[in-house]
Image 1 (cartoon, rainbow, N blue to C red):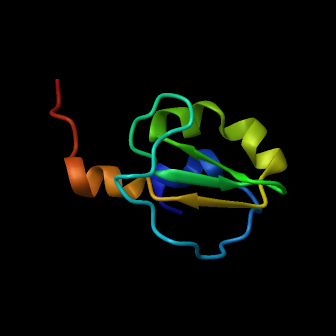
Image 2: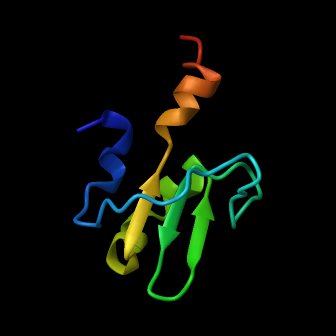
Length: 82
C-alpha cells in the first residue's frame, strides 16, 4: 500500500468518482481539496492536512473516500531536506 495513503487504511469502497480540480476547496480551510468523503447524505472535501486530522472519525461514517493526496507530491514536489 502507498505510504501516503496508510492514514486511511480502511474497508471503504474504491468506487471511482470525478477527479478533484483546483476549484474544489477544503470545507475546513478553503485550501485546494485532495480528498472527497462521500457520506450517506452529502459529501465533504478536505485538503491533505484536514483529511489526515479527521481520518479516524471519517472511516466510521464514510460510504466512499476518494484520496488524491498523491497528487501533492506530483504537483508540488517533495520538501527540501533540512
